[in-house]
Image 1 (cartoon, rainbow, N blue to C red):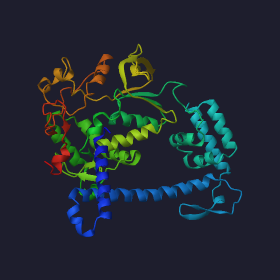
Image 2: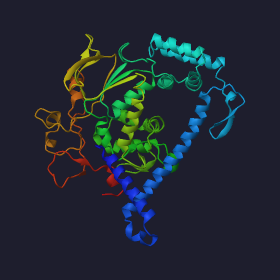
Image 3: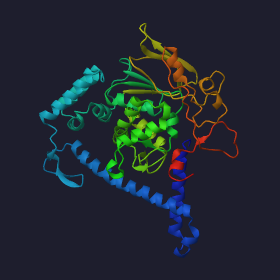
Image 4: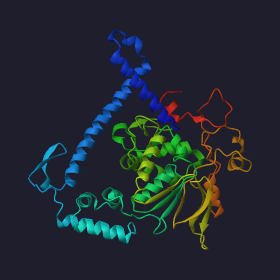
Length: 445
């Protein structure tokens, strides 16, 4: 297990199970002597997690039955069946109505017009609709107006359906990089019906976004509780930026911060319920999860949302793939990429992927201390300073951009963080683990 958060959760769970066994088998009069403080904390955490699971199982069971009864067609219209905790009649769900048939045909027609299904799949779905295929009817009733979800659920009806992949045309966009910026761009395109090729040079997604620990600042989902307001957030940001303040960018950041957090909560499913007042802020506006680190939680949930589109063919994810060049037309428009990818036999293969839109979301260059690096060029005094950025932070995307004429701005703005963890057995290692603002903001340091 590579993820430090997963290791921590695993240790916590095992310690909690061990404490539970002690409580079950030891005499009560020696509990106080046998259980450490850490074991008690772990035990309470385990009980809480199991309680959450029990509640979720009950909710999922009710959801299953409420859906399952609709999928079963029975000749006995008067026979009662259990659904969502209530007794309902199977005849209460009308799968034969013209309105549902119309919704099914309309959804299939729109998918075909957008090139998301081929003619063979279109014909098969239309045939199923006219035959009043029960699963398709239920899907059309509840998701006919939501093409993204309708398309996503189609393989559950028939695993042999051929949905829109990249064999029948180029994608709408190529996104390079799978940190928070790249995954956010990808999910937004997918949610709007676009098709994406997502490229990552590393073996796992997330980049440095995985390491974020302190939270995400936003105003003001809880302003009625904490008295925060946009102008305060704006003034705090201007004061922190000093001479580097760019008002249009600050206004964009502040005014869109609430919608960004709501999107992470509502669309991505991230818990951001804990608030803290960290450095430079006049109010509590740094959001983080109740458990785990904010970066890892966001990346885990957003990549899961992106990967849910793989089965439908809307997204193709290329891991262990390095972009070596951008392809452009005579007018300068970037229309594709050249990549080197590892084949199944371990050998490298060169591919060209074309798309009308290419998004660079590749991160920074703080870990590249080689001669001629961006760090040496723009901040030579930091060449010997340890970095918490991953070894993959080498400025590849910046080089790709400048190769086709992109301009650069604020290249000297390399963040220097005041605290980091030092391995006593390897104190001179140039790679360090960040001791985040959260440590200071809530009193850890």
